[in-house]
Image (cartoon, rainbow, N blue to C red; front, side):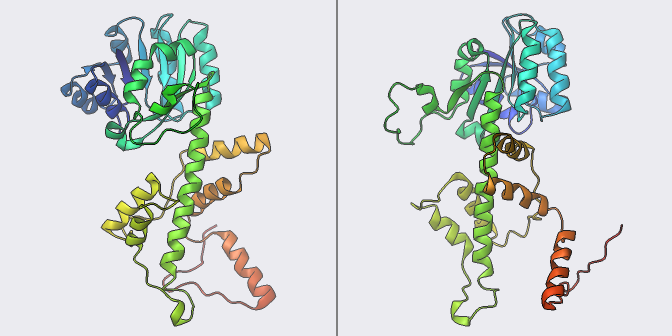
Length: 334
């Protein structure tokens, strides 16, 4: 099959390469001409603009946008809507907000253009490992593009089959799922990323406790200088908390278990916030996911005003005067 791909960054470019490996044709475009030319050398057809891309594609066209959520995706889809024809399909494979998908799908349907939202997990490893995909939108478009999704998906691999799945869609075991109508794919991916925040925070806190065991105010016999890189590695081998996230942690610690090259400043890409919003709307308790999100906010500040309030209260009720660590001060500009 042929697929147009817009946005050739860490994931978009490798999506094109994985498709071409399996015999699919790709037409590619990126505002960074160097990225487009690199894919052309690998076998893609390069496009100089969105209009050029549309003109170079066979009908019915299918174009995959792999851009950050927000204005750039909105502008791109609106531009494509004016270029495409009835029967063509727009796919948003980025981390868009599911309500935007619903709105876009309704608007495109008036022109006869089909829309799919594809929550895509796999990151920079997707070229070799494949991509787990959660897909929402037009069911006919999904079925038509099944060969594309099958190529991009990781396949069954060595994961054992789950008992009791007789009669269910076997494509789920390949690594891709049709979740429902417009927005359903990105909604499932949104919750996936919220869970990811919680899992990552659990690992981070656990390793921090292990590391601090040699620094805590404890009896000598209770202090341990633990080899964190080796702990991470042994946990990978048959423990109940093994995961790809642990694999990545073990790899990083094998290089330097002090992780000195990392600042500790942790961004969030939006899905965690949207997950908490959904939990509030549904009145579903989400204690762990909420705490993980707020910890990311906390990571961007050395010492917050809230911590000063805590220190003030501790001084007030117990006379605990907490001096700043050497080299730090508590002055703050208004």
